[in-house]
Amino acid sequence: MEYELRDLQTVLLYISKEIKRVCESNGIKYTMIGGTLIGAVRHKGFIPWDDDMDFVMTRDNYDKFVKCCKTQLGSEFELQDWKTDPHFGFGFCKILMKNTEVVEKGKENMQCKKNAFVDVIPFDRLPANKLSQYKQDYLIRLYRNLVLFKSDKNIIEAFPPKMRMKRKATALLFIFMSRKTAIRKLEDQLRLYNNNKKADYTSMLGSYGYQKEITSRKLFDEYVQLPFEDTEFMAIKNYDVYLSQVFGDYMQLPPEEKRVNHGMSKVDFGDFFIKHIKFKEDK
Image (cartoon, rainbow, N blue to C red):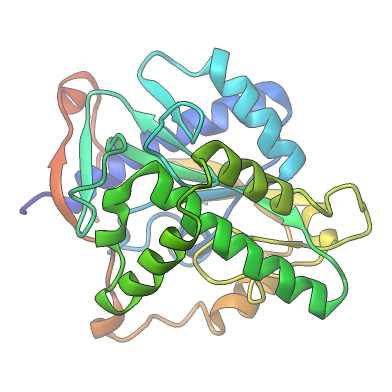
């Protein structure tokens, strides 16, 4: 469908400012991540073609954030996780903008709420032993898929065709496991090594893979504020280490054919632009 990408970015920025407000009010540390962090460093705002925003927090900060959101989010916003939405099967949370609708291509039939959103993802500690890492990664991927399927049976259609049969077979093998049990098993795996304060971190729920996002615990010791559009957001001070590891030469613009985003099949911002002023300058 036709919509103005800059309008979507405006709404995402508005949601992100609410995340920032909750974090700053409660001493919660967070960092931009992925394309959002690249955008801050390379463009001082959105990557021009980007249509999402992502933040991560260490597990202790994440748990505090979720708890604070239950009572402190502004009336325009809503916390979405697997406790607040029975059809939401992801192990992280989203902050939703009420009275909007944003549907990603390929996810039209999903049953969970589909408002404009910003992802907030936990980073958990991992074992030092490679064999233990591979075991944990396998179990997390298994339980992630089970939670997804048991939360929303339509989720299978969001996977590429070659992956659907494997996902269906996995779901069939564990047909008698309840959603509640699958969530508990996934939570247990995600938190398994968090008591080891000398252990490093990784994003066990991210898009780039368990091994690729292994991050020294020391990177989460220091944070800075980076300009982003008309505000600033927090980032790990040594962001270059993380970005270089995951993306290589992240300051180099990709070729035009790789400048892609998620794409949306439906976008409705409700009365947002009646109540709020857009960016003064479009990019």
